[in-house]
Image 1 (tube, rainbow, N blue to C red):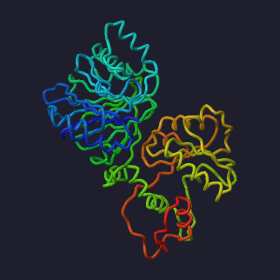
Image 2: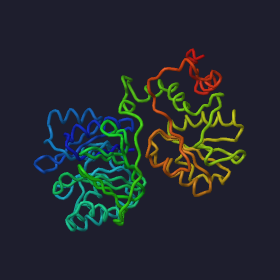
Image 3: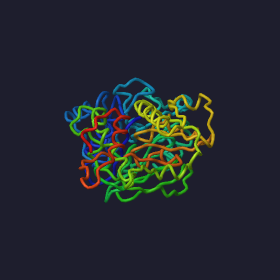
Image 4: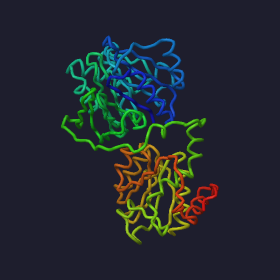
Length: 427
């Protein structure tokens, strides 16, 4: 899953973009790049394979012109190896247009052949560069970047988030999404686009979640959203209830080490407010979609380390709730022909809420009649918005256990046993 950041405002855009990419490093990537519209109204780019630190070193040696509009990207290679040439952004229209892309354009070979027939040759191995040249072609015809992107996305098949900037329209960034994440950060005299709110939470807590097949245009003072046909859309607004420190390593050598160390507090914080004075656990999100004896089977779906967490959940479900439970890998779930119906609860586990295989598995479950619950810690993400209910995990914060009302000891023992964590002297 690539990291994407866009910015228009009064701050130096390069600083904002690089900081945003830094908070998206947890996604994994093999190259990084930025494109800035400088105060000279020209596009300036830099991109390097390897870690973000390689890009920073390159920029320290060869600084870009200052500017207040830009887009930035961390790539996880799909089409073409992780090289400087294949890193994003990709340029078109004689270097005046820059584009970044998350996802896979499935019909890019056909589109690339059409471009070649028109005398337009791609210099990279990526599917993404094809989109850049298509937008540029439409821009030359329309003279409007938003309309050019709208026309382009209607020719694309697959999953994509696209951000584009053009030096003829300084102070404007346009984005579009289909089956891939894109959120808007709403600032004062500045606005942001990103694949995850972590990229801009340092600057604003107010955000909008873009829906499927929508196009967004941001300037420093405005945000305009339409569908792919140009019809106005009112996106969902939400507030982010955690700060930038939660998206950083906090002195740990890796995000994995940090998150392992946070497990006891993460579990406890998530349960806080869900336990009454008798020690009983209540989950209103789940109560809203199921009733007693209504669920005959629970299927957990997840990828990667989330699947290991789901295994613990399935173990707990059978041990304590005595309901048959299993774990399915998201990328296999749709093709296995699992027997599911309205008595099946499908629980998706995804930190980002944007894991594509898990998203498609959730949609398959819903189409098959199952009820869906997502466990996630990213507000405004696509998987929660596509589920019947969502259980958001709480971000880890420093807090003290209350002396007057101690955390129920038996419950903590059960959680600790489940997670294989020490009791840490809780009484």
